[in-house]
Image 1 (cartoon, rainbow, N blue to C red):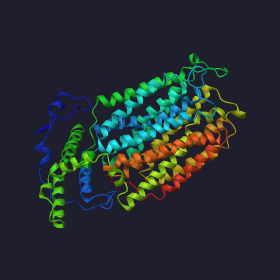
Image 2: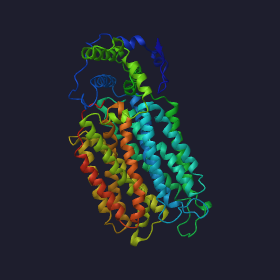
Image 3: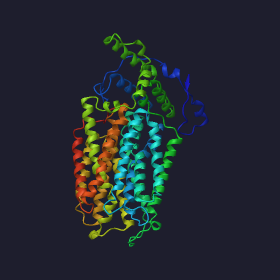
Image 4: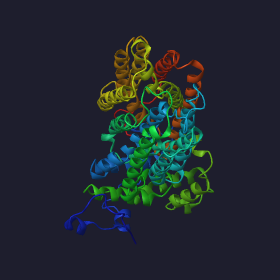
Length: 554
C-alpha cells in the first residue's frame, strides 16, 4: 500500500523529481530501531502543558510529533507558509481598515449615504457582526472538519463580496455586503495561526509574533491604495452636494482590494498546503499525521525517523494500563484506537466538547478566561478608536478646520507605516527575558498612555505625531497577542480556543460604534474610554499563568 503525495510547493529539477517517491506504509510503520513502547513523562522542562491540562496519551503523542518537526527543522515548506499564511494577517487588518477608509466618502445624494449624520457607525456595526459570526463558524470548523478548508474558503468569501460591495446602490446594501465580506475575514487568524504554528519547529515559534509584520503591511497597502484612488476620484472638498458620478473612488477602492484578495485566494488554492498533522492526531488518525510529517520532511529535503508504530505503542500501553483498572476493557482497542477515536469524533463533531476542553484544568481554565477577557477588552478599545481614525484626523485640523481629503488619507498612510517596525521589534522582544507576557503587558499600557496624550494635541501635525506613537506600540501589542494566544492552547482545541477569543473580541467590538454614536465623535470621550481599556487589558496580562518563551506548544 502506498499513499500519493500532493503536488510539490516548488518546481523540482529532474534529479529531485526522480528522488521524490510516495511515502510507503513500510516506511511509516516500521522503525529502523524501535524504542521502548512507553509513554513519556507527563511533562518536561521544555513543555508548556502537563497531564493536568490534557490526557497523558495525547501529550505523549503530541511531544513525539513536535520532536519530529524539530528534527525536520525550518525549511522550504515553512517559508512558503510564512507567506501564504501571512495573507491571513494582512486580510485581518486590511478589511476593517477599508471600512473606516470609505466611511466618510459615502455621502452621495443619489447613491450610498448614511441615513443621517451620526448614523455612519452602522457600517462599522455591520462589519463587527460579520467578524463575530465568521470567528465562531470558521474556528469551530478548523477543529472539526480541518484547517485546510477554512484556510482557503475565507479568502473566497471576502474577495467575492467585497467586489460586489463596490457596486452597492445604497447604504443598506453596502452594510449587508460589509457583513458578508467580514464573515470571511473573521476566520483568518484563528485558522491561519493554527496551521502556521503547528508546522513550526519549537526553535522558530517566535516567528508567529513576526507574522504581525503582514498585519501592519496590510494596513499600509489599504491606506496607500485609498490615498491614490479615493483622494483622486472623490467629490471635491468645496462641493456641498456630492453625486455618484463624481464620487467613484471608494468603489474603485473596493474593486481593487477585493480583486487583490481573490488573487491571494488563488495563490492558496493552486498550491497545496497540507492539513496540520496535529489536527490528524487530535482526530485519532495517527497514520495520516505521520504521513504528513514525512511529506513536509521531503519538501524540506530532510529525512525523518518518525514511524506510526511509535504512536500505536502509546495506545497499546494506555490499553494495558486501562485493563489493570477495568477488567471489562476490550483488547481490540489497542492498535485500532486511532480509528475508533476518529469515528467517535466524527459523530460528535458538532457538540460543545471542544469548548469544554478549553477549560479542562484549573490552570487552563484561568488562562482561557483571562485571555478571552483580554481579547474582549481590546475588541472594544481598538475599533472604538481605530475604526474612526480617518474621521478624527479629518476633523482635528488647525483651529478645528477639517483637513482636505488628500491630507486625511496621507496622514492615515503615515500612521500605518509607522506600525511596520513595531511588529518586527515585537518578534525580537518576545525572546528576551521579558518574554511574551512582559512585552504584551508593557505595549498595552503604553498604547493606552499615548492615546490619552493624543487628546492634548492642538494641531493636526501634533495629533498625527501622537497617533504614530500609538500605531507603533499597538502593532507590538497585536503581534504578541496574536502569537501568544494560539501558543497557550493545545492543538486539538487551538482553532476553537482562538475562535472563542476572537469572538469575544468581535462581540465587544459591536459596542464600539454604539458608544461612538452616544458619546459624540467630536469630543475626546471615545479616545479616553479606548485608552483606559488598553491599560486595563495590560493589567490583566500580569495574571496570565503561562509564559510560552522557550517552551514547546503542543
